[in-house]
Amino acid sequence: MICKRRASTIQDVRTLRGPNCDSDHFLVRAIIKQKITTNYEKRKQKQSWDTNRLNSQEIVHKYQENIETQIDKTEVRADINEEWTNIKTIIVNSAKEIIGIQKKERNDWFDDECREIKL
View 1: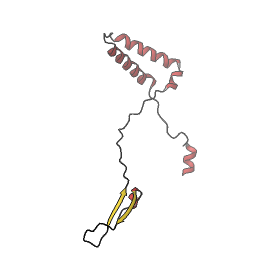
View 2: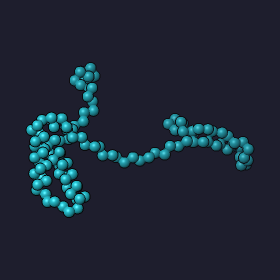
View 3: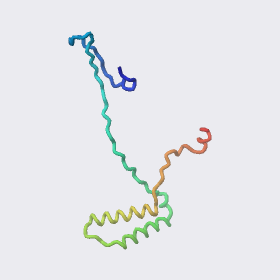
View 4: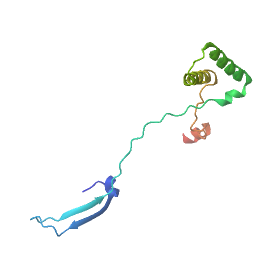
């Protein structure tokens, strides 16, 4: 009556002989436990800056100069919120340009030796 995949959802099955429905069949009652799935929105992965590059003084100096020149080019705004978003975009754009985004390596343990064994 039910496929094997859904068999774990059935909690209890009983036949009810008492109700008379002018038939030679018995009434069957089943308790089924169903799970309601939830839709999760895809979350944006946070970008990680390649902070290892900041160990070099040359990169740090370029980053600082880039931020200073861009801040000098922009005009001061009267609204503090606009000023904050302006400074934030300058810092983020400079970081993307000079520091860069860190590339994630998921299989650190899977190296050439493992590939050779696999083959």
